[in-house]
Image 1 (cartoon, helix red, strand yellow):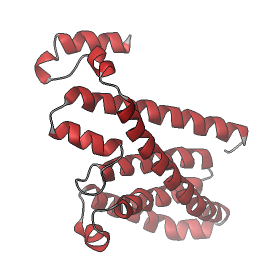
Image 2 (cartoon, one colour; image 1 turned 90 degrees about the vertical axis):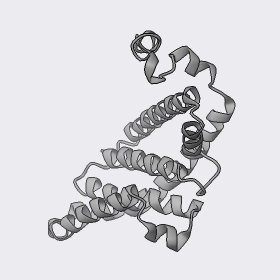
Image 3 (cartoon, rainbow, N blue to C red; image 1 turned 45 degrees about the vertical axis):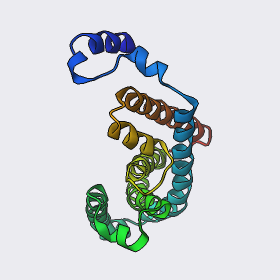
Length: 199
């Protein structure tokens, strides 16, 4: 129903806004786009493992010590918003230190997620911490890949080039793949979490 509505609206009301019909988006799907998405998902998953290895133990420590939680909670929230805002607006300090590179993307993709995982798991919600941690890793990974010169691979890179070339069918196709990939990973993490009885 959703895709049918998309098809109809794209051919009528939204035709003047360069929104491609769903059938056109499906036609431009390619193994290249899927491959680029897999690159992004693999890097995001590796980043997730790192943030969980650091964030979950620290979150557990906070959960078991109310005094510690009260002491550092405000500082963690400050860092989440301050560092997150700095990354969003591409504050030059990281670019100056590490250049436009995979290392820059990697660092941007783990700093805020680690803090968020600590905060959420510190309240006893480990499975939610894992899911939101991965969502943030994926978001920052794609955002980093969209920086021209940082990398020539990943679905974020494809998004940037599609937009630059005004190739809107490919752009929307990449966005649809990101949505499907994120949905699959969320279901997978939920399944594993339930099997391992992670709360």
